[in-house]
Image (cartoon, rainbow, N blue to C red):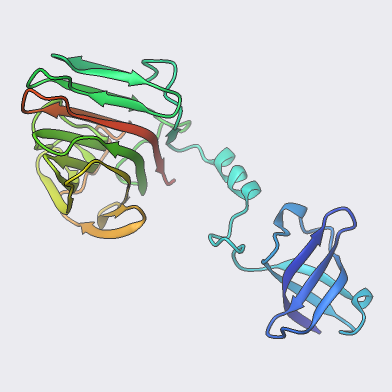
Length: 285
């Protein structure tokens, strides 16, 4: 007979396992043989397995013949299969959480703007001269050279906002201005205008925004958005769904090779800054 089970113990040396029969808290079979056709990396404790059972009282007469469903962490992917998919993925993706050597991505400043480069973060700051800015940008085209707004895209960053008044901060995939609050360039992402955080998109002509929260103190934030072409761009803060924008979504290819574009601009004679810890952009093929 065929039964479902849950992997409790895995011995890659002997290729044997301890398996709990699904729905039975008492019946644990020890020393169950596992088919060598199942890669060892797939045998993650807590994963659902398929058992061929001849005699439930004798583990020597049972064998694990397959796995099914997602792993215990969800998502249905192991490290091995994710790496295999990335190796086959010829589309556009970019990731960074190391910001040395200094100047390792394109950047520009005006007035008293500056950058401070560290291994785990880059500080973007205006300095104390009014109307100064500091801007970063990164282009990536993918192995297929198939960058486009017409494919699903994830954009995510982990940042620390050190200021929350008299400022314009833009953090997007696509393009953003050096100064000012509005952004009609092709993009998806976020902006912190004074202390108000918005989700933002634009189609090259018109911008749509989603007000998310107002900051009254310096704060860390994990900001993510997912563009589903022609449908919506959905926004997440610290993993919480904050809603979606469905109008003025970018289409075509213009500016879609910008994986990251950011600006901090001050509107008073005071230092405004934010720290970038991690950035990631992934375009589905």
